[in-house]
Image (cartoon, rainbow over all chains, first blue to last red; front, side, top):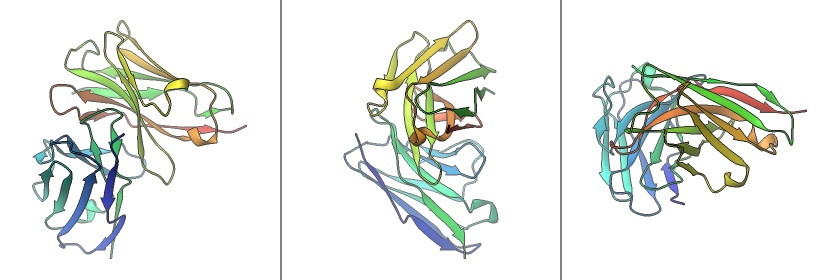
Length: 107
Length: 121
């Protein structure tokens, strides 16, 4: 199985801050990387797919980059609604695997 | 706009079989463009991919669950189902069904709202 490692596991930030979350794959997954936003009681929301393509309807302050084994999700100016848990997932080979999540909290 | 909805018992006894169904509306489960997947979220932990099925019946399971897992599809009802046998407390989770885009990076582009299944006597 491909292991996905996210960092940090938790992060405190303020509204308006710029934050970056990283995700590392245990082997190359080219660009088969998706970022999701999770909130309690809701289905995960797709933010970015193919490492850098913004899902329709997602604000442009979300940006994904990377390829191969190293990926980043950047939120350029945090809004209140962005405080949530973020997950990366590889879909290069089954079993598709997720990172352990990054909990983004209000400072 | 496709919608997915999970249904099934919220409480299952240890050693019994967990059964869930996902009903797809607003799109055909027989589309060649998609796989139909199950994913779960353990309380306080991360997400785990369970497996998926194609409308033809072809499946791909997580090896960690394969011995206990069956995913099936009913194209006449536009539904697919999950059966997980010999459950333990470790199978307590929110279970999601999701659509996987085969021709677009295999990402889960639509999700159900999720259903909590608790394994307890």
